[in-house]
Length: 83
Figure (cartoon, one colour):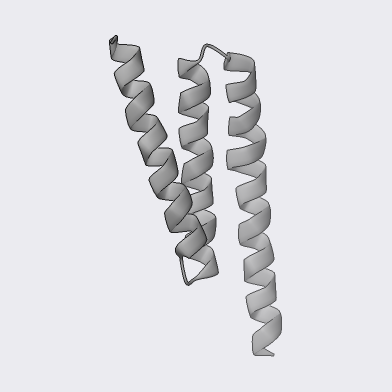
């Protein structure tokens, strides 16, 4: 077993753990943060699988844009509900 295989196994376990925490979190903002972390860990796994184009796309769209969209949506819903 090589070092890359060990790192990939650790990243896979972390992906499963963070995915479970994202699904089971009670607050929406925590779920969004866990999904962002999940996306960043998937970027690491794509780099380990030697797919830098997919990793770059996931980093820009999955980690950046989607997380920002979720956060801005949660903030606007929260402000609208308090009025």
